[in-house]
Structure formats: structure tokens, C-alpha cells
Length: 428
Ligand code: ATP
Ligand code: MG
Image (cartoon, rainbow, N blue to C red; front, side, top):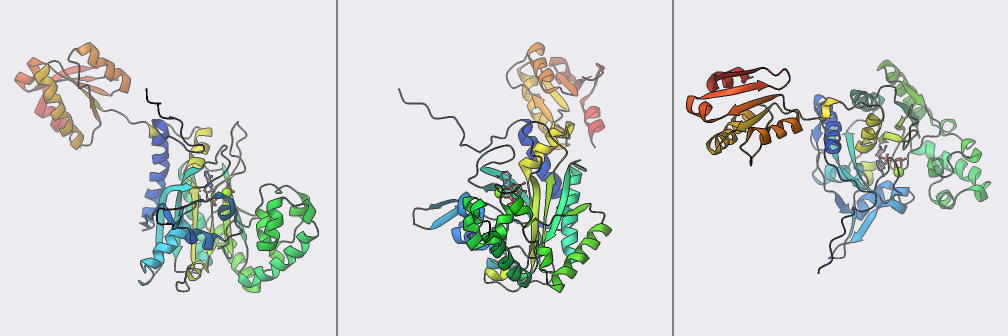
């Protein structure tokens, strides 16, 4: 006998079915609707790219590039990587398709699976979905503030007010960082023995990344490290001050987190995260970012494109779903309500109900029917199972006289009416 196939999904992946898939789509669609109000365009890029799209943009000192990428050689020996994040692919597409030639601000949103080889735990998977936005064409604190406020608006639309905090920081412009990196290197060199192995490597490649370390996060050495705010150029200082004023004006409740640096190389000036809080239940994602982003003034030119600034963020759909679940924020919005179950009491009536159900669906209603049984009792089981609001019953009598017996399953009322009148009455 042939051996059966292993039915266990790959570690760190998720099967979405039943309410789980409804919740995921609910979260995604809500964000889509909001982005459409900003006249944003959806951009759909491939789930895999040439490896350098990620390795050269995120930086080879980043966790993503060092440890987390699913990289392989395809059959023609090209190095391919399953996308670990959305921005690099969008920028690649923006340039390849010369989307910058038209004037004005370009506004995109995307949604889809990302892949990272990480240790699976609550809120951390190997395949997960991100919903993200990218704005190209303006280097302006007002835009930064609007984008941060957009993230806030989306998260609030899920009912998550008060369940996360917005942390912002500036990591300065290129000039600020040059001086800061030297100061950090000098500081951390004194404590090299107390750093984890990854941070020892980071010290050489990109000492700012040490501040983002998950292992050394709570150590005094990290907490007492020099702060970027003491190394900012006057321009960067002014930019950050203006950004904060705009955020306050827009009603965004934010905190300045001196240690926030973000894990990717391409950010400049503005960085921000929305951190889950106020949840200490089991498997909680308290303290984890549900959404994160930043400005990248130099990424487009790093790809060989024109000097165009960008800013964006991405949120983890599963982390948002997790938080909403914890606070009971999904209710009936993820359950499909069946408006009508059509019951056919003989073969002729059954065929008739199949056709009629399609017509009623065209009017915008959800219809269900049982394709197999003709007895009332068996078909009523379906009514119970899907908790239908109404039942439409067709027997020999109804078919012959163009009638329908309508039963309201919520209050039990039942009446026989002309089918045409019934259809007319449910036309929206
Ligand atoms: P973390 O600090 O939790 O590792 P990150 O800084 O690596 O997050 P980003 O690259 O900023 O995350 O990705 C944006 C968002 O995508 C995160 O805020 C989070 O909600 C989500 N996310 C990132 N990695 C994962 C993962 N492995 N599983 C599920 N969601 C994730
Ligand atoms: Mg990470």
C-alpha cells in the first residue's frame, strides 16, 4: 500500500478557514476601503523577486537579510527570494514601470503574504500577511504626519483605540547618522563583552541596529547608549519638531521613543511603530508592533532611480486579528447571514428552487439549498445549521399556482403569497 501523504502544514504557517478566513478578509477589506478614500491605488507585485532587491535595500546587516529570508536558486541558477516585506518590491516595480514620470504624489497600498524564517510564537509566523502603504514623491513632514495618522485611522476602524500606542522617533538624515554611528561604535566597543553574538557583528556593520536587538533589549548598556536626538543636524531637528506639531494637531496620540530605530537600512528621519498594549492574557502580543514604518528618502535612488522620497508602513494582518480577538472586537461582522433557504418538496420543485435561488442571489441576498433531499424534515436541518432568516417552501401546489410559502424563521410567521409579488417585495 502506498504511504499516505503527510498532512501537517509547514511550521509557522496557518490554514485559514471558517471564521478565521472571514476575520482575515474583514481586516484586509476594511483597510482597503479606507485607502480608497485617499484615492490610493492597489499595487500587486510578485511574491518573489531577485534576491538583491531585498538584500541590497534592507541592508546586509539587517535581521531580515542575515537570518530570515527564504532564498533559493531556481532551476536556472538564479538567486530568488520569497518576499520578506513589501516595500522593496513596490520600489522595484515603481522604477521598472517608470511610475514616477507622471507628476504628483503617488499613493499605493498592497496586501499579501510575506515570508520570514523566524522562530514561530504568538504573533510571529513564517508566512504572514501584511497590509501596507507607500507614498512617493514628497519629502515633507506634513505627509509623514498624514501617513502616521492614516495608520492610526485604520487601526481605530477595527475598534482598537487604546489598545496600542504610537511611538515615533527620528533617526536623522544621512549627515546626522554619520556622526551618531561613530559615537555609538565608540560607546558599544567599551561593552563588547556584554553584547550578544549578533550585536557583536552589528557593531562592525551597523551599530544602530544594536538598539533594535530583541535579546539585549532590556540591558542597561542599551538603555544608556547615546541617543540620536543629541546628534541631529539642525534640519533634522526642525523636521522632527514640525512633524510632532502636525501630529498633535491631527489628534494623533503619540510618544517619542528615543530608542526606536527600526530594523531596515533604508529609513531616514521619521520612523514609527504602533505597539500593542493593555493586554496581559495568555499568548498575548503585548509589547509587539502591530504596524510599523518610516520615511525612506534615499531608497529610490539607491535602486538607481531618480531622487524621490518615499514613506510607508505595513501592519501584520494576523497581529491585528489576534488583538481584535483578544478584545472581542469581531462580532457578527465576520458571520455570513443566510437570508433564505429554499425548500423543494419534490423533484420538479427542487429543480425550480435551484434556478430561483440564483435569481434571488442576483437581487443581493444570500441563499442556500439542499441539493439532495426532498423531505421537509431533512431540508429543515439545513435551515437550522445555517440559522437562516427565512424559508421559502415549494411543493406541487406552489409550483402549479405560481405561489410561494414564506416562513420567517425568526418569529415563526408563515404565509402563502404570489411568487411575483414576493419577488417584487424583496427587490431592494
Ligand atoms: P518585529 O519587531 O515584531 O520582528 P519587524 O520590525 O520585523 O517586527 P516589520 O518588518 O516592521 O516588522 O513588519 C511590519 C509588521 O509586520 C510588524 O509590525 C508586524 O505586525 C508584522 N510582522 C512582522 N514579522 C512578522 C511575523 N513573522 N509574523 C507575523 N507578523 C509579522
Ligand atoms: Mg522582525
